[in-house]
Length: 96
Image (cartoon, rainbow, N blue to C red; front, side):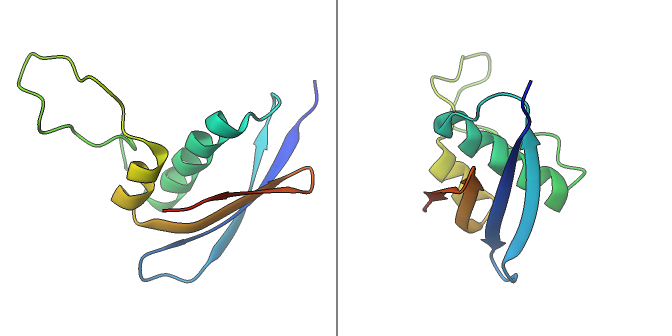
């Protein structure tokens, strides 16, 4: 099984740009990688964070939430910007 290295550059509100390197054991599909990268950033930035997903306050108690937040909404919530990652010399950019 091949291990893919993912080089990530990002910034958070009020901080300098940071660079981290992640590993993925499966071929990284862009739509899944975005969420994976956001979750890894938040795990490193805020180790006590239980979940990257916000509480959905508009859902009445006992009701089922109808959707998960988009990656763009997650980035805005966690104040992540300028997110760029590279896999096998291919660049991907997630903008807010």
